[in-house]
Length: 220
Ligand code: SF4
Image (cartoon, rainbow, N blue to C red; front, side):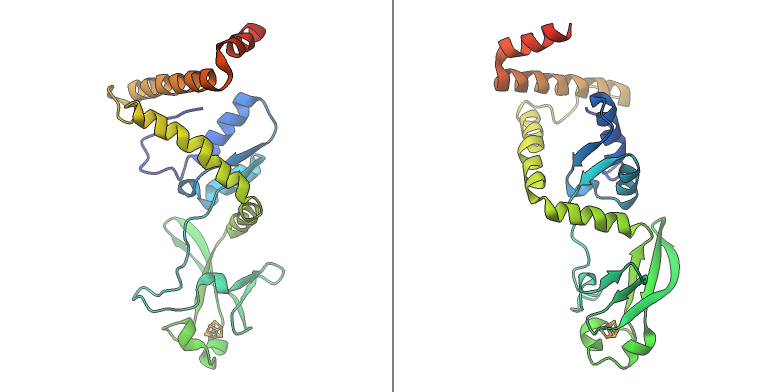
């Protein structure tokens, strides 16, 4: 499957491309592997709903630094407790949900415990403010489930690189990384030809002309 879009990044492409692949393969479920550029909570949620099992590594999250560059506990040092809908902080305190808000059109829940932070011996290592506040995406659960899958299958993430990066490398070497045509439809057609060329050459290299013709003949 190939597609050309005009988005500045791949964040909205995971579910549409994976669903298109599932339809083309005529299967009821599919394992999908993609790079970190496709990691977006809404897309992961849509994939889960569409029976697409995703393996998408997350880009780097909280570095453990404030906006001013001061070191604090990273968000990963706080453990979410789904049964009680709270976070357990490094000092063993519970940060409870205290509000919600939209950030870049996404709904976040906020967790804090002002009283605990006020008397905490670790506060200087934790926050430069009066108390620590943790933001959690409304659909963070789906992100955490998929992070557990990625953690459990480093092999599948590694294998993706050996398959997919070969395509980009080959197209670049052939000079197919810029377009001769102009306009979205024309560019889509041009890129489809590039993809077809790659697939045919790859199949010929891997299985040879006889085996390829045998498959075509069987399908005719
Ligand atoms: S400052 Fe607050 S959140 Fe941070 S460790 Fe102390 S009690 Fe926990």
